Image (cartoon, rainbow over the protein chains, first blue to last red):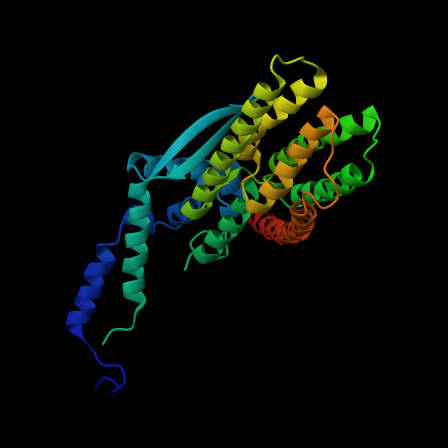
Length: 115
Length: 214
């Protein structure tokens, strides 16, 4: 049985794609973290409450993912008080922005039809 | 693309767009705050010009207009337009430079006016009128820096502050002396109404996301 003529099989290209997929930044690739970084990339600073509203993630999920992003130097966390109420805000760092951009570029490359 | 979370059914492009639109309401879009600023600029312009013999109460009311506007628009921003959480807009470099330029220009003009008045009136016989006038003029650059971040806000806001200073000193602008004020005021009202309609759309989208998340 042979492959249909309009779907050529390129083992070299497929190997490259696999390598490209494996090279994706896994910290960014995780959907919740991708959502968080995407939101942060669009503003100077984002309060916790907005992240919760716009992503639909739970408080615990946001905290745990942000901790990982913070440990990698992708985001910074600022804790303040509004009167007596504590408020937590996040900003993306230049390292985080670069990681998000290169992730988008890599995914864009993968989505492009090969050969 | 982003479908692994059961709580969020959209894509990252929509997330980015929604965040960008919402963030504008922290700095460059003021919605009903702009409508109020525009309305105050229009009302005080015609009242100041057409009723030169205003009572003391009327003058104090016009002098308080910029403070009322600033207080209300800041309250609207923090309590209404950012009620889903504060998101500070990432403003383009050009906007920031323009704002800085307008502030420096205002500082230069304000300093010139304050020095001129002090030299001309020296030794100054301090009363509420001259003290209030100089205070408003001296505070203008700070008010511009903190609260008038778009060109239209600048046009209407500077007029309101200048009119307030003049009201305290007993003077008033004539009808065609500051034509930019009613034009800027009108434009600010139209813009503010459009921004408010846009906010209602954003708000509905955020509510639906929140609803979907349960």
